[in-house]
Amino acid sequence: MNELANFKVRESKRDKLAKMYLTLSPAIRSVASQTTIQHHLAECRFENMAMFIKSLEYNDRDPLTKKYGNFWYKLLSGRGIKHIGNLKHFIESICWYSALILRHDLWLFIDGKLEIKDAIKKLDRDLKRQLFTKKALKSRSFEDSIGSFKQSYHRQRLNLYCQQTLGSLEALMIIAMLQTQKYQHSRPSSAEKFAYGQFLYLFGYKYQALKKIEIGHKIALRFSGKSSLGTSDTLRQRLTYDFEKLDEIIAIGRNSKVENLDQFVSDEILKNILSKPNHLYFYS
Image (cartoon, rainbow, N blue to C red):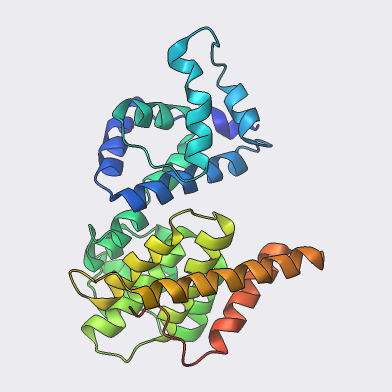
């Protein structure tokens, strides 16, 4: 454990964070909390869940806190949080930096609760510097317009892909959705391809989300521009196949003992995507 674990969420922010989380759909709740606890263990350098639980100093004689040992393992395996008491305990126990993952706007964006123009305004400052022209930054008014974005699109999107963060995935989704929904570009656009690769990396490798197929379906819904999509067996089969191929890539990297497994997996995902021009990506 490092000192980051001691920076807790301020009490004044906890209720707002809990309220936001409870507005999310069950699948997004599952992925948001599972991603957050994985981030917390890694960021605060807990060797495993047992070490984290030990740091909370539960009293084995207290029935209320004794039950939380099992709660944390269920959370790590992908169980979403339904009860406000458990949710408040979760928020109180993680550090402020991990809470930034739980409250990330990507969850609202994927869930259809945040429109493009609002997502653009809420983007991280560093991402805005990467994406927008100096004129757009100076005006501090980011319209949902491709004209506000810098040129050299391929390099820009490649840079976003290489970051492999929740924020860069959101940025790629914004660009792709503007291209297809506002400017009628043909699908899949280059931004959609990079977004798909980042989706595979984040939820199939970095965070290994239980509900990753459901997340893929929700992103497909956002890209479609429709209010709803029927359950698509074809989409599920395609996502399942691509995650299985990702598992093969990970196994190859581990068996080969590559020096940087993260980089190897990221590069191989992108290589596979760019070599398949007929792939349907987020099509339903």
